[in-house]
Length: 84
Image 1: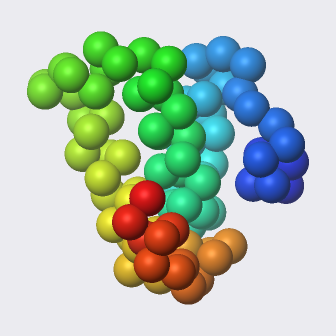
Image 2: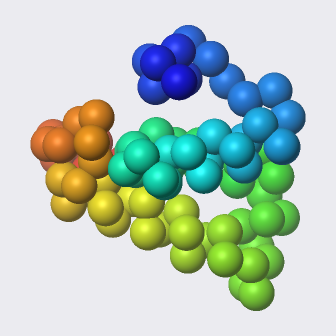
Image 3: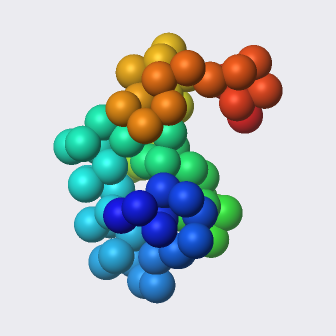
């Protein structure tokens, strides 16, 4: 977990991505969950295009919570981090 949060570890497959995403959500690590969602969309752009999938909604949920300061690891974000 700490290695992923520090950007030193990347998930190796989809199963690991989803497991990490669930852990991030449960623990309130919304910034890391949003980053993981963005990475998943970059690796699999068709997932973001599936309108019936909850993937876009969930990613947006993580971004909003992180941007509003509800992340347990980084409660305050600067303007660039909120925009990004």
